Amino acid sequence: MNREATRRAAGILCGTLAGAAAAEGFLWEPFQLDVTRLTIASPWLPAGFDGLKIAQLSDLHLHHISRAYRRAIDVIRKERPHLAVITGDLVDHAEQTSACLAFLSELRAAAGVPVLVVPGNWDHRAFPTKQSIAAWHERLQVETGIRVLANQNVAVHRHGDRMWLVGTDDPYFGHADLDASFKGVPDTAFALVLTHAPEAFEELAQLPAARLVLAGHTHGGQVRLPFIGAVRVPSRYGTRFARGLFKLGDTLFYVNAGMGMSHVPIRFLCRPELTFITLTSCGLDESIAR
Image (cartoon, rainbow, N blue to C red; front, side):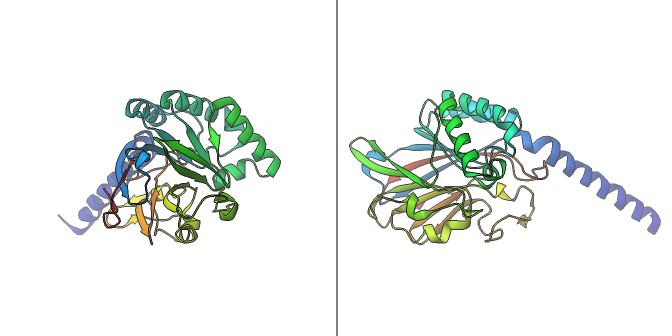
C-alpha cells in the first residue's frame, strides 16, 4: 500500500471512530443509567441507623423526562431506600419547572420515603433573586412534598437514635453558609451533609459532625477519555473530585456523576448515575467504604 493510500485509510478510520464516538456521546449514553451501590461503615453512625439506605441523584438539568429518568424512578421504586436526596441543579431555566415538578412528583411517589434537595448553581441562574428562588422552593415543596434544605438542618430519629441531615445552599456561586447550615448540630453528632459542589469540601472536613458528604455538580466530567478520565470539571479543584468516593481527614465525600448535561448535550464514557449508599456502624479502626 503506497503512502497516499495509507493516509486515506487512516483518514477513513479516524472519521469512522469520531463518528462512532459522537453517536455514543450524543445519541446513546445520555439515555442510559449507571446504578452504583456503595456500603459505608462509620464508627460514628448511631446504631439505630445501621442499614440505612440512601438514594442519591444529582444535576437533573431537567428539560424533559427521558428514558434515563424513567429508569431511575423504576429502580428507586424497586430498591426501596429509606431516604432519597438530590444534590442540586434541578433546572436550567425558569420555564422548565413544569417538567421538573412532574418528575419530582413521580419520584416522591415511587420512593415512598422523604426526599430532600439542595440548590445548585444552575438553580440560582434560573432564579437569580432571593425572592424568585424562595418562591421556587416554596412551590417545589408545596406541589411535590419534597423538602428543600438551603443552609438548614433537620434532626431525624430512627430506632431510638438521632442523626442530622444538613443541606447547604450552593457553594459554587458562594451561597453556602456553613455556620447557618450546622446551627444547633452538636460536634459529636453524625451529620449527613448534602451540598451541590466540591467547593466547600476542605471546609466541611474541618467540621467534626460532618461524617459523610454527598455532592454532584461535576457531571463526572461529562466527557471522559480512556486512561485520562475527566477532561474538564468546573471546580476550583479542577478534576480532583470529578466523581466517586474521597476522604479528607475523618470525613467521607461522594461525588455523583449526575443525570443531566449542561452547555453541550453530550456524555462520553460517563453515563447518568443513580447511587445507593447503605450506612453501617463499625469500630473506630474499621471505617471503610466498599
